[in-house]
Image (cartoon, rainbow, N blue to C red):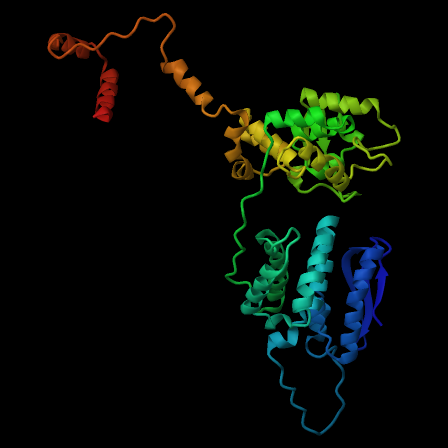
Length: 453
């Protein structure tokens, strides 16, 4: 019987069972929660079945356990009875990979349990969905070492024929995401069980450029002038801070610093649930409030319910619901204004392009947006900058005009003299001028003359 227990000091779960007469206790990195117990129970059931069938491979389930060596040669050493009979020759061993690799389903569950503690809730849920809907139905019963590159390529081809959410077939981004999880599982298995990884030489599908459709300043003004008054402050903050949807919906009053005029991005809300942290380490940031943003925050402060932690709550006191806002406010508003339909996330893209168009430092903008580098900034947004201000090229034209343009009230330039009217060169004056130069000045003049020639 494989039991699930928890350590009293750390509250970490561990498996407790007997194998070949030896008590085995294997600690996991999972905290004692109902969800983790449910996942671990599935693994415990598989271990129990394999022990009963005589197919249990300790190293396949617990490759880093010190007990792997104990069971590698058939279990703990036992005293051999005294006999005159010749020793029985050892049985022929199967191919090492065949003897050691578990099924894809068994290893995938182990990989999921090991990796889960470092994932955010939403990512963990996404991985679980891919495992259950895509990977386990296709590869679940296969031994890991038998999965070939041809199998992987065939699986990707099948994904490309599957229907997508918005009509057509699955997009390259979704296919790459599914394949990424498959790659991680197979590469980890290949590293542990020492077989050739099936993903060698397989590159991700080329994805389309990020869908960016920022609003112009005129369109932003129309939206803010027309939207329902109870959502005007919400959209003002979205348009002029570049906050992600989950970040603005998860904004709490404790993260508004009016004394320093800052919004502190520390938490996020996805599908109405608080996430444990933000998207990336770079997403933890402080954003200075523009005057209109501060005014919007102060407007919310006037109607704040002291018992509600959210800056933009719903009627029942919960955080802003992204789906409800999109369907009941956002898309009807765009239709009313005869604007092209686009996701509310375009408010973030609009903020980035407006900051770039106004000449702000790219490094500063990347920090405000929560990007680790400026590379993403230029890759995604730079092509939209000229179209937002309708003044592309004006800065360059202004510089040229200020340096080379005609001065006010300046007389028109004289026409150059014709060769016939030109005075003969004064060689004596030129020689005298050269003789008056210092050696350093003369060397500089000669260098410039060489470059000019």
